[in-house]
Image (tube, helix red, strand yellow):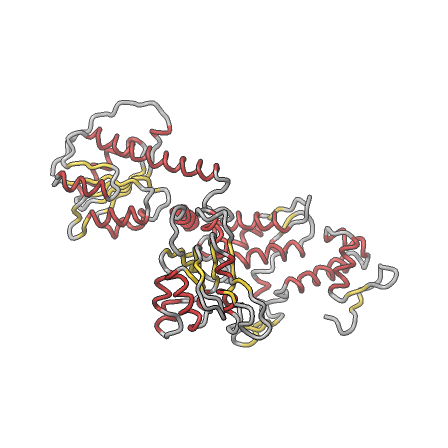
Length: 489
C-alpha cells in the first residue's frame, strides 16, 4: 500500500456549518493507513477514532455523536460489506465512506446500494478528496439532522417527548424512537420497574404516523385471569351471566397504539389468542361467531426475563418473536446518574405548590447522586415529593431526603419478600410522610394551627382537612397539643 505523503497544507476555507468538525471513526486492519488518515483529518479539528477490527470499533459505533465511518472493505476475516450493512441498520443516520484497494465497478455499486455515502480507492492519490469527502459526509449528516428536527417541530412534537436526560444511554434511546417514525413494527420494551417504560411507549406512539389515533395502555398484571380475554377482545351480549356486550381494548385502540404493560403476566391460554390477533390482525369477541379486523400497532413491555420464561414453558416462543420485532431497553437510573439533576428539577417543578420557589441545595444533589435507586425514576419522584412535604423553607436539604442513613438505621420495619426488614426511622408511604409532616409542623409551631399551616405552605382549611384525613384533631382553642382520635391510624 502507498499513501501520497507528505500532505500539503490545505487551503483555508470560510467558516460555516458545512465546515464544522465531527467525530470520525476509521476502521482498517492496516496500522499505517490508520495513522495516515488520522494525520489527514485531525488538523481540520475532527475527532478521529481508530480501530483495526470490528470488535474494537463497537464502543465508538455506539457513540451518539458519531458522524462518519471510514470503512475498509477487507478486514482480515471480517467482511466490510457485512459491517456496512450492520452500521446502516443500527445507525442509519451515520454516513459511511467505503475504502478499498481492490476497486471495481461491481463493488462500488454494491456499497452504494447498501447505503454508503461514497467510495474511495486506495492508494489515495488525492488527499484533498479524502478530506472533502469526509466534510461532505458530515455536512449531509448535520443537514438531515436539522431537517428531522424541523419536521418534528412543524408536526408539533419531537421524538422522545417526555423523556428527560442527556446521557449517552438516553440519547441512544431517543435515537431509536426517532428511527421508528415511519415504521409500523411491533415494539418490545424491557426495563426494570420504575424506569418509565410507559413513557417510552407513549413517545414511540407520538413519534409515529399513528399519533392522531388513541394510545390505550393496559396493565396485564392487574387484569384477573377470568376477565383478561374479554377485556382484550371484547364480549357479546349474553356471552356470560349479566354481560351486556362491550368492545375490547383492541377495538378501542384501532387506528392507534395498544400498550400491553407487563406482557409476561398474560396466561398461556390468552397468549395463543393474542398471537392469532397479531398474526391475522383480527379479533373475535367472547361469544361471537365471527372475527373483526383491527388495524393497530402493539407495544409491549416487561421487567421479566422472557427468555427464561420461554425455557420453562411459561411464555410462548412464537408470541415472543412476534412481539420482539424491535426491542428497546430502558436503562436503570443507576446507569444514568448524570440525569438525576434534570429529573429532580422536573419533579420539583411538578410537585411544588403554585407560586413557590423551591431549590435543591448541593448537598442534597450529592446524596441523590450517591443513592443506588432500586426503584429507579419512580422512586426518585417519590423521594422529591416526600422531601417537599417535610422541607422547611425554600430549599430542599440533604436532611429532608428520605434516603441515605435514615434507610439503614434500625427503625420502622416494612414487609418484603423475606418478611420484615428495618429501613430506618422514616416510613415509606406518602400517607405516613404527610402525617409525620403535620405532626412535626404542629410541634415546631407550639401547637398553633395557623402557624403550622404557614410553615407547611398550605392554607388553614387545607391543613384542617388533612388533620381530619389522618384522624388527628386539636383542642377547641386550636393551640393545644395534638390529639389522636381513637381507632383511627
